[in-house]
Image (cartoon, rainbow, N blue to C red):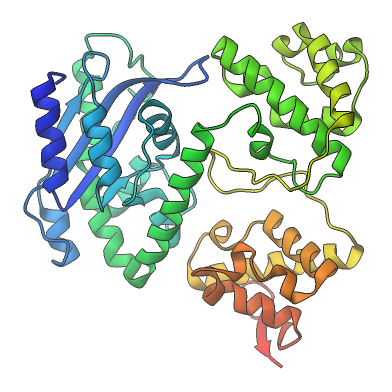
Length: 410
């Protein structure tokens, strides 16, 4: 399907529907911005979202596969962006592609992979595994890595693309039944995924440094070099339409920024440097040299297209802060297990180190605006961490507990 009238009809149906699901297929190999190859949408025409979850599960969806290589799919992208309830599975890359291609966000996203983590089903669980767990389906994934830009698409490819969205409304219904009030947490975190994806799609050479993993917690000179190297990488990636990692990985950027080699020859011999980086070693050396005149006044935001996870490179400021961080990680694991939530949704080790460093330098009030102490996390983990740090909660040994310790009020 690609004719303008058909696309407009799908966009109108999406707008009227109480629930819509989507997925994208694209060609991303050796490209900075992937080529959008297929848009899959499914929607419920008549099911009421106030009905029991079983009714949502049982409702048969309408499904359409739309070819963006043969027509303009912008009306569908805009309809998805404005819809109050859009279900998708692990859609970070899809969202970034829609933002880059059409300048859209998405106000009503619910990420089923994220929802599964809030149900204790697993971290970053795949769609096939989730469908098997919740609705007893075995989804074939053989076509996942096929060439989606080639035309015509095969019957097997079309069947695969259909299945990727057809079952999302039912999976959503099953997850809603398990989530209960936690659905609001999922929606809040899903909204943050959209914000991060849109920001990642809008990176410029001037802002690229804010997206380099491992840049947090570095000294001023190192961060100034990260700014220059990230800008250089972004310009080259745009020029050649190549993925950032093929130009230079985040790890190499941070290592070069720390060591700041002054010669192109040293850069050509750098372990992990890509062929592209070695070929342009003179420009890299110039970028490092120019960083000596730059002042960086703030920490990077480290917005990424990847799931929330650990970020290397952050450092604590004292031994006691490091000890606090180790204990905070243990407490997060304990609370997460008891709440049946993936620990990374509460706080990562990098988060724990940031909390410890902030309190070490400025007291408890200095950590008040960090993620673990705001939004839904405050009630789940923030008050516990605050209580332990303030001495109101004790972490005591308990050989009979699965963790070997437990929390008690003092």
